[in-house]
Image (cartoon, rainbow, N blue to C red; front, side, top):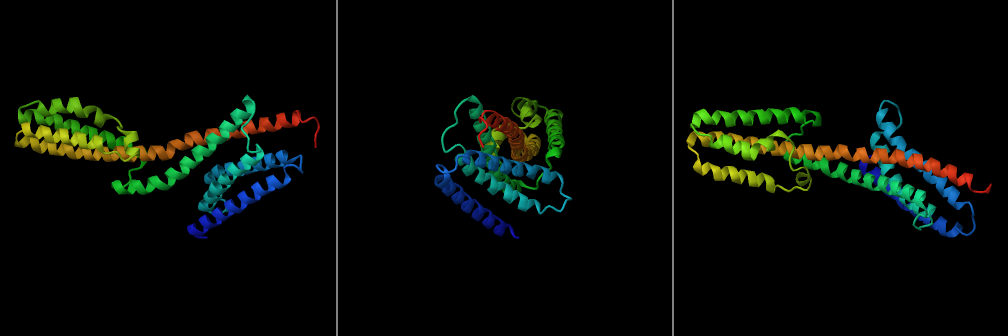
Length: 273
């Protein structure tokens, strides 16, 4: 099945499922006393199925369908649980501290999942606009290489230009920039003003340099552009990885609290069927 067909099928599944859940709730809420139990077990089963997607990614060799198909199921089934969660709590805010924590965990999982869905669609396209992609694990080594080259050029300028102007400028304005990742949030929102400001400072300094010093400064300016592009890749790739560090722990926290919730419900249901 093509991606477009998978998306269309997923959207149809979400719409039909949502209508069925909402219609079923309003039809049976006064007729079936066990409706909260039924919706609760269904919601828990859906959460287990959604969690299975993480296991599927770790077992790609098993004939369990394509990863893209599992992803589409994960997305649209996750959206359907939003409607099912509303049905389960009867579209009312939770009561009590335990139920409030459980609801907060569910909201955290849902919001982090939607954020991950957005960035996994938007960021890969943006990465390709700033040159070839650098593997995330290789970025520190490339950063160190650029930093080392910029430092060598700054030191080299002292005997060649018989002046410490470039070296002083490097220490004051560029040392920290080359040493570590910069402007993570601004790169995420495509704000290029920090790069333009540094290039303007370099251009302004060129007025006070001789010909040989300008050649060195032009090389440093090119390294500034390379480092800024590397920071851009780092910011976007870090975001692609970091959201999982919130989504996965919240998911397992939700499952644990859900199990405790089930035990409490049945322990205090007074033997009701």
